[in-house]
Image (cartoon, rainbow, N blue to C red; front, side, top):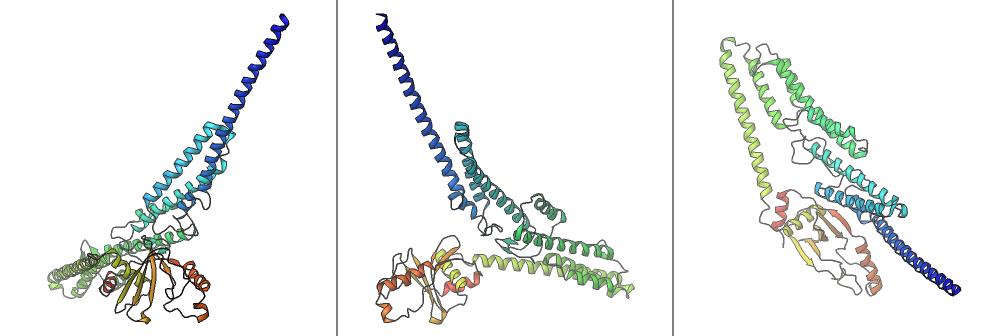
Length: 426
């Protein structure tokens, strides 16, 4: 009886051990499956954050191909959106690490995300510096946009060295700011500094020659000549007009030094002349503003397509034709409409041509972002009869045209030139 009981007990123990083993195996399998899923999640993030990945490409478009100058189309909102995406991915990696510890390899994914975050931070800092730099100048044109830096623009009328120093210090604090972009910014800041120093120099000379707003009676022709030379170097026309008004006062004082008895009358005449000069300068400035405003409004009432056709022609051809013919070609239409075997256009395209063959022609598709894709379709299909009757050769030829398509940025152009081309569209 005892022997039978012992056998039963052993059997129960074995059964229990088997159940426990099965549970452990199931748990291990579940754990392995969980770790594999977590690793796949991290790998997906890593792939997106490395070359050719979606996140990598999203950050890459912030810069030019050398990762130096910023893209012309870059915007703070886009940077913020990308920054939030990267932070979200970083948070997902941290969650995987906290749930799985060292069982999941996250180092490469973390490094890739951090590298992109660093680039986004750099792009944001560069954009802020560009914005602050552009605000130093009074022109409607941006001092720097993309890789285009305009180094001879006039400063704003109230610019101080403190404003320039603030931008300069921001650059000095970041050692990652370098390359051609930094050289361009440094050049613009140097231009702004030199203009401010020129204004300070002129004000110093004026203070030496004036008592308040009136020239000293001891002012000399040599002082006038020196100021005249320095004022000629001023780029801001509003500042220049104000300084020129002071020159007129000086000249009036110099001319009246030999006429002591009529000094008071001549001073009044000089002040009146200054007021006229200021009024004239203001009138000319108001006229210029009015004209510029008119230019901005002259395209109102015309469709985006009409404006686009004109701007594309001006960008690609430049010469104004007597007529501008527009032909809309739907996607799938054969590139070579005369011969069998032609490949079709992958998207809707526009054909622009002048009244005469010599005017040229353009075939393109709009990318709706300020750029177009231009197809190098010949104006004449000149080929031998053998090639024209061979569909395979026609297919290869037209496929080559698709392969050679290129993306071109469309210039905004002068509104008056654009309007001239809209009026001759057919």
